[in-house]
Length: 194
Image (cartoon, rainbow, N blue to C red; front, side, top):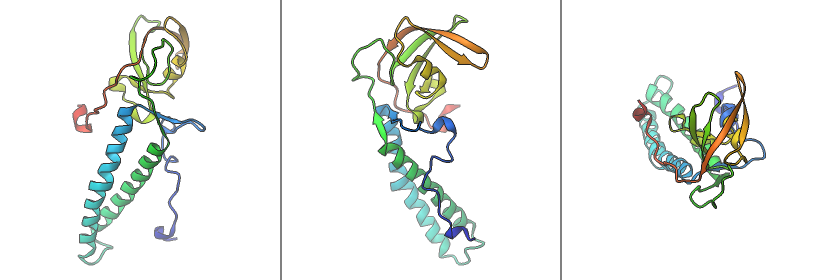
């Protein structure tokens, strides 16, 4: 059957790796910075990139034979990718539950958006911020609330020791500090990561 007549999946989450999927029955928690970043990406796609690619496709289509026109074929493929990403972002933002760590009441218990310092069994101290699935950034120690470390830490309090299942076996993490502070909202572009 011709691809033009096949229906694309309505569920854009099907192609996501398991760690990017929002657990069934859960809200899509995000910090304000993560929500703003996705909203900015959506705006850029809808108001800048898609109109530009549409112009290129229209220009390429006016050049004649579309079956051998690389600009046309690439443009159509790129439009499908953009449209899929737009649907994904709209769905993620629609289902988002924004939690601001700065407005959370003071507590020593760990919830979403907490910045936690803990001590590993080997004596290393680590500090992580528990953020939304779409905000994970290991270079900044931003971990998803669905990650094994975050799940082990959630609902514990300062001074508690929690078990963490690792590939090497069980490990105890001693929670040293729990803070609710503003997180860095600007993320570097891929070229800035080097």
